[in-house]
Image 1: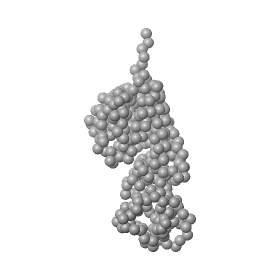
Image 2: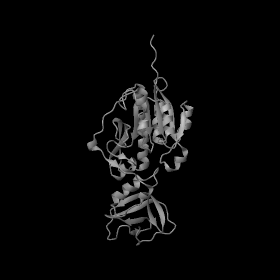
Image 3: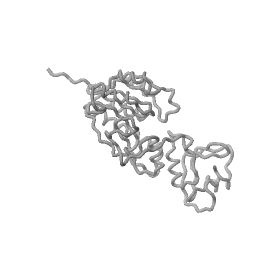
Image 4: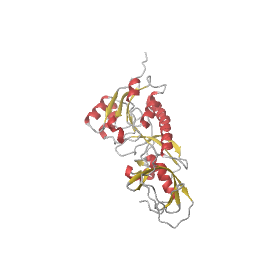
Length: 319
């Protein structure tokens, strides 16, 4: 008499809306419950919400779905590692988490299966990154893709290793970047891609059929972290460069800005102009009816920006 094989199990770690999109897609699969189940959802503690772009609390949804939920501030503590080991997953997924997982966590599925390799078809550790790896490893993938003027990016599911974003590629979805793309619209596209990719990954895990292709290190690049203070506009850039910069920092990111009268003025939208002038970059050329500022190769019109307390004056130079 044949017996039904037990479902493959996975543990999911996230504190980000991309993780939420992925997790909901997996739990919505017809295979969920019979061929696949989640043994634990580890959420980022709410005390981290104010410093986490895209933070979401997936705990209530998971609990209603019958998934055990725990909250963590870090996955590098012994307590967190013990919790993840006890969840005994075949697959460990970490999506939208700012820390790199240590070896002790990455080897949990391997230890359960007493495997030689860290990853195999029936077990492994999976992450997701918002570029077409191996391009754009590292931080701030959505802003950098716009700042760099790329015409495409994507979302990649990959095997987790100690080095950031360096493991084998499990699956990818390409995302076109429009000429007027903002971080807001690209964020939405990436979220939709996580839903599609999550469903694909869920099916692979349900079939215990994880597979991948090694990254080509010759094509690898790494993008650095971006901090809020790096959103200051440099008027010595070209109009096109400034336009990309402003579009790259729209919500959910803090925004581009300039400083006037010791006040930080957020800028949400500008228009590059064909405007001949002989002024230094940063010179205010006009304030009425629009704010127009000289830049390296022409000028820019500020279409949406915060109004300063001290009125702007034509002929002065913005820092």
